[in-house]
Length: 363
Image (cartoon, rainbow, N blue to C red; front, side, top):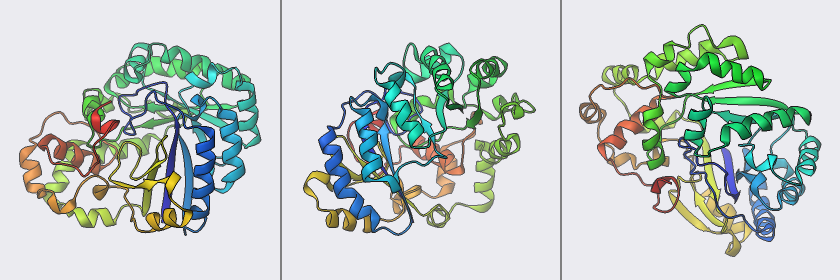
């Protein structure tokens, strides 16, 4: 089993329209609470069998005491902390403006960090529109320069949308100007939450993606791998396979990774499910013992897909799903499940996600 525990220690500077974990401005977890959280959590995680990781979120560099938080995490939970091969994701907005950024850069070097990753949505107007930060593009480019000056490599995660396919040559110029060391082209997920419903108008279609043929290898993007997804997971292809093969939800779930996600909020509320995608409250870390935390984790199963969002027994048969979703724009998804969730969502099929602030509320 693989386990991921996201601990939200601070809010994010952006409110990206594609962000399924409902990132956005928010309060910071007091450092004393973070210490108490790790002191209880680490003994429980040490007992788990499998791959276990802690991911401080949403944007740890926004925390008022980010340097102390990083030292604390590395001291109390080094075995669960990102290793040297990890591409540290950040908007760059917070870290660029910090007075203590030299200390943080020194810590990152000390932890073996080699590369930080910035997400790019397109040219300036498009990027700022999607991240909902008026100077997001300017900050990203300035931060890339700063990272290189501080001895780090810079990776760009290109979040595919239809405007990106139209502006590809100009985007390549942006990557060159910012000395891109590595690039990834990511097809955004679809999950049944309000924020991603609103993101759908940005999603690229199969025809949009054809503009990129023969143009991706320039920055090391695996073009064959990208177009394998485009061919397999466009809505028309997913529909054709569903008509031919059917869709056994339980069987498909068994094929997914054996991976469980948990989230701890700034108030130390402990949830089963990813940030913004909770399906069960497990308690509050402040009032739980390490033994109770361990038992709560052990009682859960993998929640990588399907029952992470739906009661499978309540899902309509695929024939009804296809009948209710006639062919329209041939959007491209990263997997068949994202396409399925889009169809279920359009039908109004209820999820098992807990109500509350964040992605479910459409932040």
